Image (cartoon, rainbow, N blue to C red; front, top):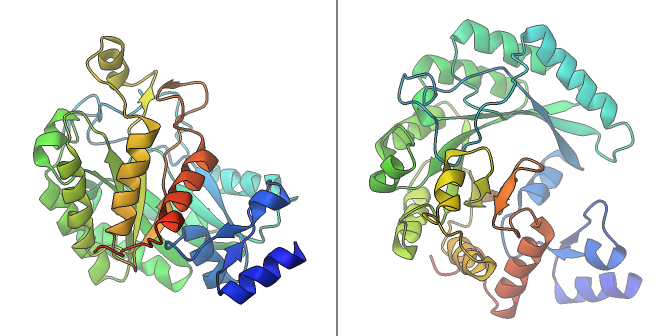
Amino acid sequence: VFVFWAAAFKSGKSFFLLRGQSVRHQLVKIGIYNNFIVFLKNKFGGRVDKICVDGGFSCPNRDGTSGTGGCIFCALPGQSLKAGASDIRSQVKSGLDSEKDSRAKKFIVYFQDYSNTYASVNELKEKYDAALCDERIVALAIATRPDCITEEIADLIAGYCKQCYVYVEMGLQTSSDITAKKINRGYETAVFSRAAQILYARGVEVVAHVIFALPGETDEDMRRTISFVNAQKISGIKIHSLFVSKNSPLNECYLKGGYIPQSFEEYIARLTHAVTHLRKDIIIHRITGDCQRGQLAAPPWNNRKKLIRNALEKTLETNNWTQGCFL
């Protein structure tokens, strides 16, 4: 290990440690793209873990406000915790207790499921306040839809920037309004731009979600999405491969042969193109999405994060490519 680190120092390359892996696999190169784990380590001086909470929110694409049924890739709603403010606090405390043996001393509270700004400002404030219940919480992450961002909600979220690091994740998926209709997204792409601008104007960072291999999309469509992302007021991105969840509307189409998932090699090629054409300042939060345990119908490689990460890094390093090198 000492020889490896000495060689790394001599070559000028940076490395970081990943929990739960062998020494051989712990030394991972980080200079080739803007990695979220490294960003957090640099910002907070150590490991930062996420505590996911269920805010009990719904979605305007399910209750008829903007549509019904949700996006075709979304799992059908299960039993939500329907958490009130006190339940949020309990979830956070439970998450902190479960991390006692973790090397992390700081945490992000992540409102993950459904649209976590889809409520009144008073209800949102109550739940966000309840989440920030411990001094070890250094960040607040809120996942939502751009059609659930108003100036009043953005003002509320911006107020938390004085207490901790705050970012809002918004589902874009694609810049194509044609594809958006196919997947029942429920809003036009311009809505994303407006929401991102509203948040940016108040100092709130935005993370865009994009999905590759959506039904009917070509490689050119996916490239346009990355170009669109580059032009937005965002600081981060999550890139996913479209996977088929057994309890999603997409599964029926898949079982009937109406949707063929992309291969592992196709995804790595598309992911590599995205990274090498992405603005260098954009932080890459994820390069694959997780399907709920026991619900993955296809593709079989989707949840193998290490396999995907290693393939991406090998492709970039072999060709001496880095994030944004072709932008």
